[in-house]
Image (cartoon, rainbow, N blue to C red; front, side):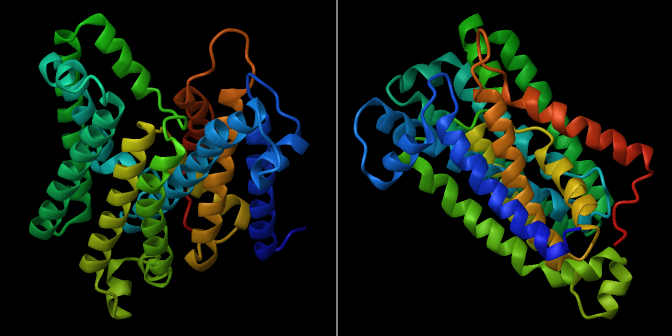
Length: 336
């Protein structure tokens, strides 16, 4: 059987294989030899454009988004001692959706910049997500209670959802359809020049997640035990919220709201690695998040008859059984 370190190497290798397959698979199949030649600059023509300009940004986006959401989910589950917590539990996704709904469904705003609507959508999602994040940070300083903060995040999410529903009723059919498509999520919206908008914040968030591995282990046993070991629980919770907020806000702005990956991946990683030690679990969760996001992207882009599958339909089919498993097993998720 594979050791715990062996699983990390296997996940890394699997991620590289899936990335290559992601460059080859689609409505137009590209031979793996052409994929390699396109990457090293020895190919020109349609296949080079498909691989480098279209599929490479999508594969990179999927890997980065999967890693970021998985890390954020693990942080939230550990900090709040809740196996059903995820990146969206603080209402950040709802804030992003509200920002997008305002610019897509409020016609005067949408009509002002017809030449840069995709950029406006990205910025609106980012503004909405960051606004909710700042609200949660201020509330955490005043409340200092994890459970109350979770409830506040859920209520903010419900409030944002209600406002989005009102805007949908007021919007015209074409705008509503565009908003619904955005809500399905996609890894295909980032062109090569815009990848730094995703990769820089996600990279910083992943480094922040890895830097918290040791204090996260102390939090597993309880806040009181962590304090006895010298961990500032309040400060650690705020660091985790900031990190999760940066990851969730950036990924939602660039890809739309991606369901279940942040919630389900940490549980799969615990089952594979058979540990709750964050020194192994965090890098394993990050790698597994990338792997599963690449799998979902492959399924979405496979040459299905008719239109492609919605990304959130695929992630939900993957994530919902994991959540059901957590519920049926009583949430015994923190045992190593």
